[in-house]
Length: 190
Image: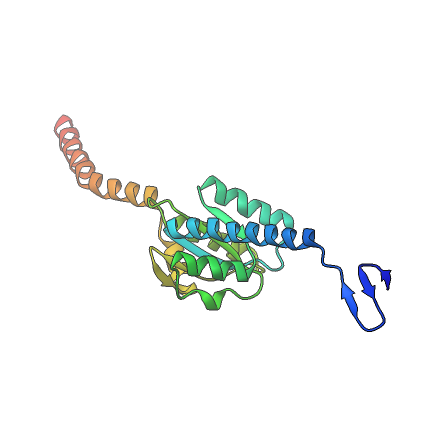
């Protein structure tokens, strides 16, 4: 019997030496990947708005700027393998987005219930400026949204903008009345 790089050779048989360290290393890697999927599934489950985007062709600087703007708005962006993304979406109970998990995929999401339009607004702004970026689809408050619906949502002002518009509309009659009273008072002075 002779030995050659983990292989035992005898006259009638060949034996392979099994390395148990490799097997335990594989289990550790699988456990790490399962934890990654479980953690991401928990984040997706809490998300109020999820956008699936294609980032192929973006420069490092463009991705960095996009991530910074998203982070400033309390929105997260994660680049993850499609197989992990499919498993995480399945664990989170998200259905209807499977066809968007093709090619280079990044997920933009927020658990902020105050303004679910913010991720759509930021990504749409970048999509308009950069041809390489495109929205594949998304989910808003548990409902699947197409690319067109997300674009329409992005055109709507945010919560702060809508509140300022409402205040402006409510103040207009009072302001007009005050101008009318002032005009009458000015005309009496003359």
